[in-house]
Length: 338
Image 1 (cartoon, one colour):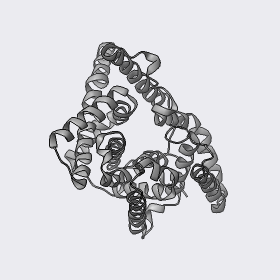
Image 2 (cartoon, rainbow, N blue to C red):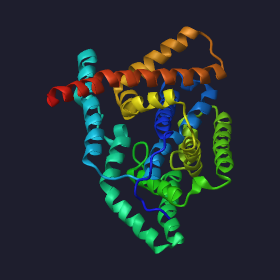
Image 3 (tube, helix red, strand yellow):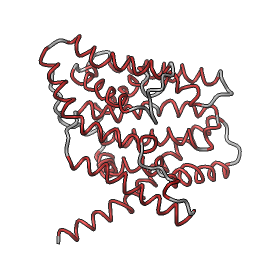
Image 4 (cartoon, helix red, strand yellow):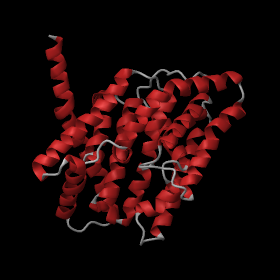
């Protein structure tokens, strides 16, 4: 088996990061916008759920190493957009700081969990490497999947272990699972794609039927108890995305575009989801205005609108990050360099 150290990067991973963040935008648009009132939009919602796991999967697949530059990059983006959003909210809507809870598990929980993972990575890697040296596969399976099953069942039966999107314990457990997948070459099995695609389709079909047979319930009410991020079907479905992109050979122009956009991917999350102004305008008012201007939209039309408008939100958030953070930071570095 390979150690837990980082492995050579794949040219399709930058495209995967952009694609997964786009799906995360789809995830939030289907939840928080007017489009969520259309029943068939549940298809877009379910397709997008495994994208959250996929981000953790990238870290587990390639390994993660503690570095202060990573810490300051993530922490800096969270604080920067928290302050900027609060200032704009106060200027335009007279909403005070205490009404904008941006730095917390319930808002920027993904960034905070990732920061925790960075600090824990030396211990995680040392532990995994130690188990690998024993050569006992049963120990690895127990170390990874017993906590995973306990975490999943604890949420299903309502023990209340999860906080926000899901708890940091789930986050770390997911990371462990993907280390297992990489170490044992799971995605190199001959039957990998057929199995992963069947599980992906089964997840979407099962929870679509559950939702469509319970029309009085929302997406969240149907999916959250048994089909949320720590659901085994969701984890395996996210591996389907990773398997596709690991063997992808994107055209050079697409690769360059994705390389350019990757530094803004985490900011896209902060802008459209954590920022109350982003939710209000990008996900709320803008999408409602477009949908209302279209007049009557059927179910499939709503799904198409969800996918297209989510792409628009993704692009606009990238442009905002380029103008509000990356360009000023670039100019500041130039000035300091002189």
